[in-house]
Amino acid sequence: MEPGRDRGLHAGRHPSALYGTDLSRHLPRRPRRAPGIHIHAFSPLEIHHGAGTLGISPAAFLERLQDAGLYSLPGTAAEILDDEVRAQICPDKLSTASWLDIVETAHRVGLRTTSTIMFGHVDRYEHWARHILALRRLQQRTGGLTEFVPLPFVSKEAPMALRGRSRQGPTFREAVLMHAIGRLVLHPLVPNIQVSWVKMGLEGALHCLRAGANDFGGTLMNESISRAAGAQHGQEFSPPEMEAAIGSIGRRPRLRTTLYADASEERRAKAFAAAPLAPVVLTPPHGAARKPKSPLSSQLMTCGNSL
Image (cartoon, rainbow, N blue to C red; front, side):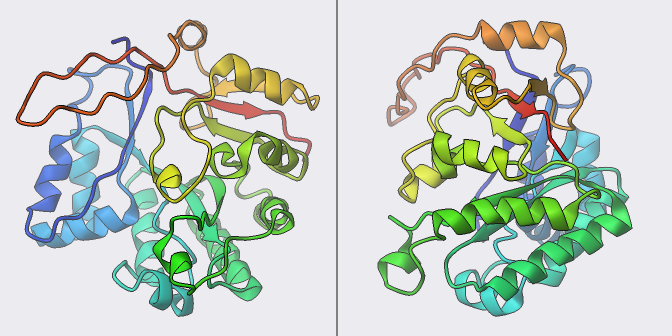
């Protein structure tokens, strides 16, 4: 398999595992084993849990992961950065202050992160405002956020929605406005607003590009989290298809790296030559051999921003 440059990892939390040690085993030692690979992995929640299982500070744990090959972190598990909301939707996750502290710590040790908001459930507009303003204040202190990614709540198979304890997700207007407000409030501190085509679909994503977003995210490969919640998108969005979609509204596509540098011509050529995504093959039980997967380079695409 010809690897892409960027690799993202997320892990579960097992209460009895020595979680912190397990995390570092997933990272190839740089640069000897994996030259040119950018590892983008482990949410603030995973950092909090991993540091706790080892009995060390988040800063020490982040430095250990950085030494093992980690380059940047996803700013997921943010949900809504307001403890009134978090008490209802994720009481077992870290607090607002802890999330912000771990992300700031990551920035201090030299690891950049994304930032997200998952909205349209039990939250209200004032919670959205508090969340975005908290990110703005964080960015003023550190400058370590690469992008802001609004994630509309997908309710179809979400437990709290099935129990009637939440909205059925934001309206389409609210979802588009979140991208626009993110651009207005975070500009110029956070230069990139990413739209999730997995959440919004192609037409919704194009609306968001017109409303302040400038980033289409990755091509992906068998995305499962949103689809498990009922989303209809997330299998694959090839680079040629993505460029055509961006160009259809008069925007100029640009293939990027995780940290928003231009992708090399070699990387671009490999992305556009990648084989189509093969059907998912579940691993057989009892250690039976896996069938090989077709290679696919997961790439990231941005497009010219009018602001």
